[in-house]
Length: 155
Image (cartoon, rainbow, N blue to C red; front, side, top):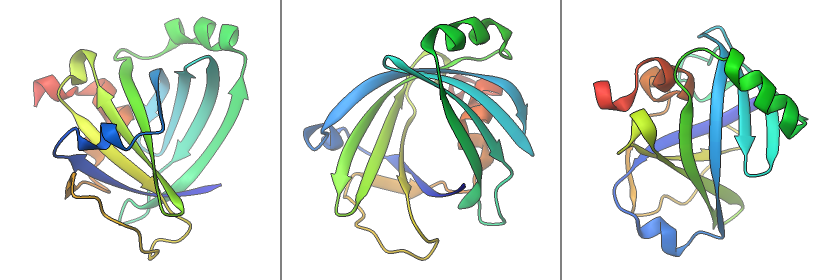
């Protein structure tokens, strides 16, 4: 239940040629407190309720609990969420033993593209594609919960 993840800005759309699939994500936050965020996510035709804890000092690791819920339940929970719904299209790219997830944000976060890679260990090595830009792991302004409160278009 510990998520280990690194995040990078994306410098080009070259990843689209490598993507195996993509889908739309809409998510809202029932709670955006940095110590415990509670998210409702609709991912294609699936829905999830997720609780995330505060990250460690590097921002690479944090507690995450996720449960699949009925799509109809997620749709009922969305109106209860705090202001600032996140909308994005996620692309999945296989890279060795890993899956890189690239999110192209829309709405109030239009123009932001972030790649995430989940690891089994904080020191695990992985291939860094040439379309990876600056690493933003641990920079809280790139957390979806924070993007819902202070969107990219306001930076």
